[in-house]
Amino acid sequence: MPRVLYTLFLWILLPYIFIRLWKRGRKQPDYLRHWGERFGFYPARTDEKPVIWLHAVSVGETRATVSLVAQLRAAYPQHQILFTHTTPTGRDTSVQLYGDTVQRVYFPYDYPFAVRRFFRHFRPQLGILMETEIWVNLNHAAQQEQVPLLLLNARMSAKSARGYAKFAALTRPALQGFTAIAAQTADDADRLTQLGATRVSIMGNLKFDILPPQAMLELGKALRTQFGSDRSVLLLASTREGEETLLLAAYAALPEPRPLLLIVPRHPQRFAEVETLNLQHGLRCQRRSLNQPVPAEVDVVLGDSMGELFAYYAAADIAFIGGSLLPFGGQNLIEACVVGTPVLIGQHTHNFADASRLAVEAGAAQRIHDATDLCHAALTLLHDPARLKMMSRHAQSFVEAHQGASTKAMHVITSVLPTSH
Image (cartoon, one colour):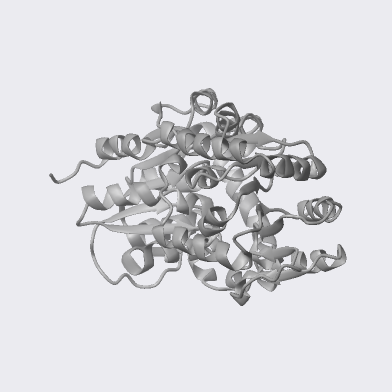
């Protein structure tokens, strides 16, 4: 009965879903493409290889799969890897990472007819969902179609756990429908178990296993030359709405000469908006997409390109990780650390609580209180090259100390889907 009521509620929401897609599509046209896939209508399959299905919601989850996909290909060379995504940016990221070596479609909405069509179209031998993807009808359909489902790199914040606990009649059977769950931390595992999950292990965080593409590191060097090799660079990475106004105001208040500010909004549909904010604060802004040397009089470079975040980290002296200045929960700081870029983070990092805490403890990251504190902390570090270099070493050591999650994930996968050799 709870699942029936849940499904009825989804049907009531159906008009809103179309309106939401349309609104998003006005800002980001890619949301208007492939609508049918979200309801279980997919292009004809081009081959009959057995399928391993991997669901990665958006950019961060997709990037985190690189080391796991490499091991999946080695262990299951006869299988086709199918990616599902929720956002167009996640889908674009898988194109950048894997090209046409994988299939990719949109994740179906959690309507019984849509998830049933998905399973019967692709007939996956195994489904792997990343992080916090718990869907009532999807998990029920997987059991009906006898498709084992794994929840890997699983995380469950205290706030999310309280929310799921309010709907225990739905959450518990959905969690118990997973063949196995591998959590990032012991705290994540405990919260998932308290919500009703069984067969829970701890694997660590796949994002520690990521390797920056050499091409991005080379691009980082080229960008640094464009920026001016004698000028310090402060990167504001994955900033969110409301944060840029605070950050740009604090930066504009700094005395000249100021470090070059490189700002990369989290969502590409906001590039024009952030460019306007720069002008409103009296800052001279140049878009990265111009691909031209940055004159000394330019204050800000707007990172308006996709898939180049590693290059931005490699080109920067210090990186602030957005989503943490205001209560958005933060973004992934590991990508900055892996290239040895010292990190500044705000107080709001509950989405990456464990990684943020460990990074601060390791000396790879420093917390700031507000935008003014961020600018002052950045200037202090930039005027202390020895400390900056030490933080860089700590950042790389921090990542190396926590690698190995993809190997543990493969142990879970092969226990469910044995290899042929």
